[in-house]
Picture 1: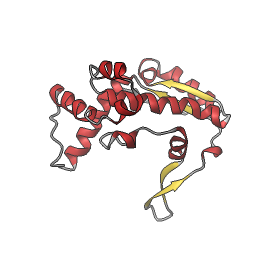
Picture 2: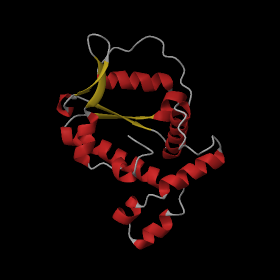
Picture 3: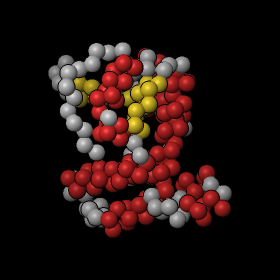
Length: 177
């Protein structure tokens, strides 16, 4: 999902979320990338990967910084630093769509004290939709915590392949957070 686009484009109702789950990039027979769509009903299982919301927000900043820096985007004005991160959060939070649409006055006052609150709201919206998906499709779900790959790689991989009913591959490379 887009991070730097307007908040209204980042908050997805469940039906749009489900439709978005089927959008993929694939390669045609000549190796060219092309957009495609797979209907979510063909899914037989769901793996829900959950990352700490705090780590997720910081990772979003790293991604956005690299994306805009590599494109030499003249409109990107945030240095790669703590101050740059804070300014980026402040800039995102200036879009008041979430506050004006979903919050009463009491909540609005609390929310403004939380840096990057719009990204946290997007995170919550995304995971709420992701939790609804397997229920809506009537299929089993396996939850994997991002940090488990780092702290318990072998068991995490074993459990994942067991859930997917696939043979486990050989040695798995170490995972760094």
